[in-house]
Image (cartoon, rainbow, N blue to C red; front, top):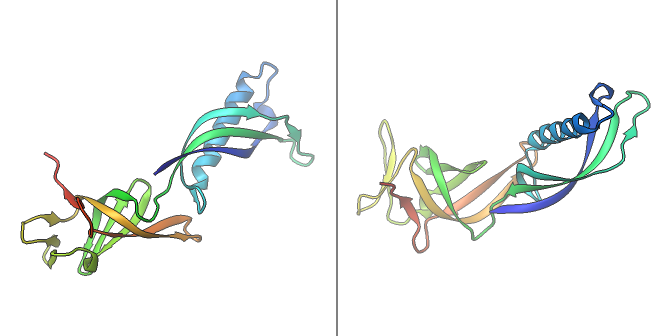
Amino acid sequence: MFIKVKLPWNVMIAAENMDAKGLILKRAILVQLLDAFASKKATKELGYYVTVTALDKIGEGKIREHTGEVLFPVMFSGMTFKIFKGEIIHGVVHKVLKHGVFMRCGPIENVYLSYTKMPDYKYIPGENPIFMNDKMSRIQDEATVRVVVLGTKWMEAEREFQALASLEGDYLGPIFEE
């Protein structure tokens, strides 16, 4: 799910990026904000940082004594992405194992669908292993699958989320695009 957020941030600008007109300064603040925003990746509360949508306010700069850089407090609007328990998502399979599949959903790399949560699907080993049911519906590498989220876990060291998913429910399973 995408979430609109308003966040405060502190942006450091080197003295050589300052000018009297202010246009270059505003551009430098925005570039620095975008770099900092992109490197942050995600937080447990807000999910993955996706984009800055607007620079709402630039506060008064404060000069740092030892470096000569100027610290600007800014307020901006942005978008984040976070999945929640009970949410229906579409995942793209990137790894098929005997005990389940790993999928990607937006910036989330590890959405796990266990074979125990795929009723009627059987594992078929081989060079390109798949899960298939009696109706010949396949879950294989690069397949898009609609699943329900059973739970999420925040991994602090990697600064990312992991999720468990299930096919148990109405209108869940592989999505066939023609």
